Image (tube, rainbow, N blue to C red; front, side, top):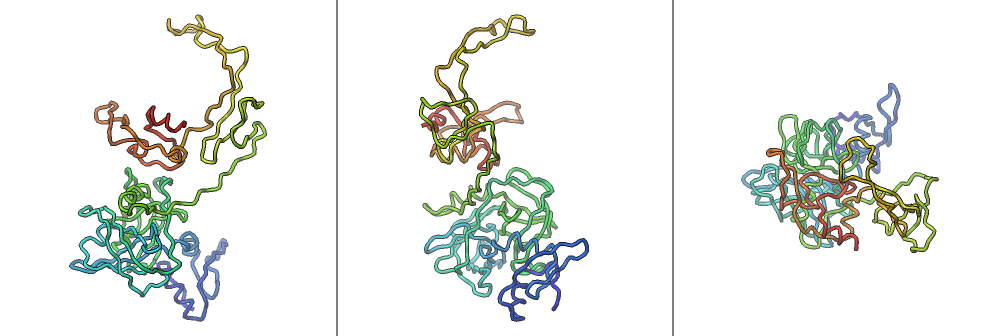
Length: 390
């Protein structure tokens, strides 16, 4: 059997396996200091390609080929972000479908069947904009929306992959590269990206972390998953939401120094310092502090060097009851579950004038920089905190 080249697409490998009478192509990697190839179901796969396959095989049914017909015919890539009973929603790069008279969508499991699509939203005239393509009617049952990993922050030098339809790699071909630089929501990826990959996903360890929107020689330009999610919030129809990544299982290392209390305990319960509790699954972990009944003194002693006149000691200060303090900062995800809506502006740093400026466009949902769901919530005002505490 012919050995596939490194650039051969996964679809072509699967098709060849079917031609030789195999029910389905499956890929595995075997590691050896010298050996790079292993045979599975009669197909020889280079180790690097097998690993790429392992990372993204489950994503392929949600990745599509888009052919736009018109004055400027174009081929690009997209991927499914949401589905309803009647419609399938696909995100792609705006320039792939802008100005098209007809849009044809091809799915991984039916690569030769063109299904008509409609550009339901386009960031027109933006060379790095996005578009939403809607397919109405039945699609292959294997189609699953791809979740945007908006909590992942890519760093320079990280290895990523893309899937596209460029001639050099074939349909649903895998492209490997590395993050060259990042400026805000814009990412430059050192990889042989061509126009036919525009609109395709940027994949890091099996997760969609961005979308290719344009290209330069041997460089793909992409925007982050968080920026794509922000776009979809306004582009998707009311009531339709982009697929969310699964909630990871929370792992807690054993800690013999504390007691975990499931849910709040009554005020008369025998708390002890170091007890940890959560009032709900999405609530912060709280650490109990039982105050010393003798109280404590605050302030600086007179003998302290540099002491100010308004820093004299006073006390004792006594707490009548135990209290609790958050073990970690409140995260965006925890704050978001409370349903608190942004209600005001936020002070941001003006580096040009070296001063803080009140920006009415900024709030805890849009602080002006990328944040993941597990990052501390910022730009929160007094009223929003009071709403959260309810």
